[in-house]
Length: 164
Image (tube, rainbow, N blue to C red; front, side):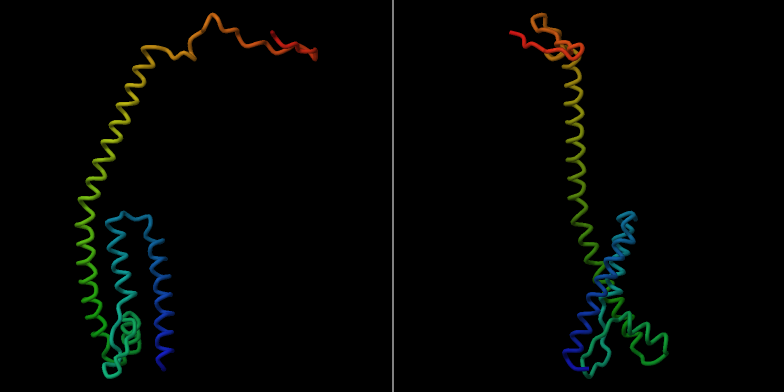
């Protein structure tokens, strides 16, 4: 395999892995967030972990493919190397995810408190508006003695004269 073929194969695999990750997002969209996000981290680690195929040539391949082929055909000893790569990249990914969660947690708490304060203020304003409406009716609801009632629709097909 020449260098261009190797790069092309990795490019095709990256596009296919991104498509699989998108399908993972769609399949886990209904789940609770604290379950969905770790599952997506595991899926990303499985899809995007490379492992060394031939240490002499420095060629890499997807670790999931190497593990599956070595286990299925019982050839080579690259499966244990791929599993150790999974463990290492998984540990790194979950540490980064934990840092992300620890940074997001106080921000969400503040946003939730701000949203609750805004809802309470809106409820107070609505209650005050109802009290004002109960105390004094609006001008549009009052019957003004100087205003003419709405003119009645003409009976029949006669001619309608304008009022002066």
